[in-house]
Length: 436
Image 1 (cartoon, one colour):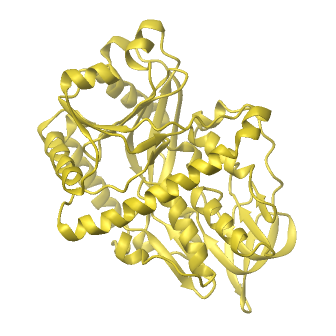
Image 2: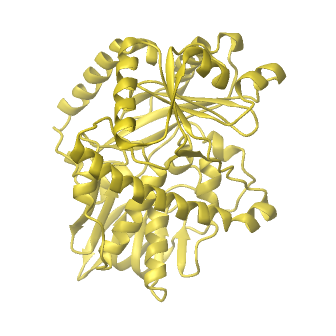
Image 3: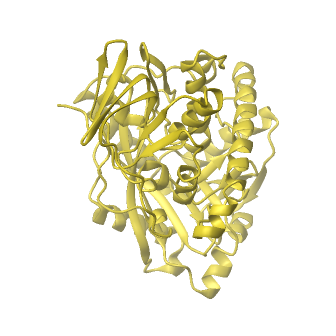
C-alpha cells in the first residue's frame, strides 16, 4: 500500500480560522527549474529556505506546500516554543549533551523572536498578531504514575541547573484555576504563540528569491540525470537538490518508512470564557504540558479561551465527533464548573513519530535530503534542524546532529507496528488513566 504524500483533515484548523482571510500564493504550474526545492512550508522548510537564501542569494529556491499555509500541521499545533531541550535523564553524559542542546535552542528561539519582531509592519497592515509571549510552562500530575514522572523531571532540572518552581495543589490551582492536579512544576523557559499566525507571518515575509507555491503537493520525486524532477498535480520542477521537510509524509518521497510513522493528535478550544471564569482560569496566558506522555496539554489564549490537546491515533485521523466528546469529558473533569463545555473549534493534526525520539535527518541519496520525525517538538527544534540541513546540503560546517539528537531507530512494519502502537497506548492509558 502506497504512502500518502500529505495529510487529509476532517476539520479546518481553529487557529487559522481566526486569522484575516488571505490569498494563497499560486500553485506550481507547467515546467520550471530551480537550484533547490523544499517540500513543506513549515518551520523546518522555512528555516532551510532562509539559510539557503542567506548563503546563496542568487540561487532559485522553491517551496512546495500541499495545503494552504496555516492549514497544515505547523498551524495545528499547540503553540509551545520551548527555549530549552528537555530530558528525564540526569546522567552526567546526558547533562553535557543537553547543555549543548539548550544553548542551540536558546539561539534558535532568539532568531525566531527577531523574525517575529520584523513582522510588525504586516501585523499593522493585515491585523495578524502571533501573540508571542514568554509565559513559561507548567508540568502537572494527579496520579502516582504522573507524580513519579514529575519527580524524575524535577531531578533532571535540578541536576542541569535549570530554573524552576515546585507547586502544591493549592499553588497550582491559584495559577491555572483547577484543583485537579496534586502537584506541579513551573519552568520559565517557554514561549507561547498563536501557531497559525506565526507560520502565516513567516510565509508572507519570505526574502526575495524564495518562491512559495501553495496547493502544490509533491506527488513524485525521480532522478533526472544529475538532478531531481519533482512532480505536482499541475507542474514539474527540476532541481539539483531537494529537501524533504514534510515530516512523516516524506516517506512517500524517498524517506525511510521503517523509521518513521504518522500520528494524529487532537485539539479543541472553548469560546471565550465568561467574566468570572475568565478571571479565575484565563486572566493570564499560560500553558501546561502533561507529566505523563499520554496526558492532556492545556493552555489559555490572549482572548480568554481554554485549549485542550490529547488523544492519539495511528496513521489515520479518528472520528472527530468521538474525539470531541472525549476531550469534553477530560476538560470537564479538570474544570467541572464549566460543564457543559462548549467548544468553538475542534481539529486534528499530524506529527512524525520515531521509535526512539531521534529525528530522521540527513542525505538520503546524492542531492536528496530529509529532516523528519519531530516527535511533537516542532517549532524551535524543527527550525534548528531545517537550518542545519540546508547548511549540510550546501557543504557548510554543521553541528554533529547524530551525537546531539541521536538517529531514528528501526521499527517493524505493519501490522506489527500498528498492533504495537495500540497495545502500548492502551496499557499506558490504563496505567495513567487520571492523567489523560
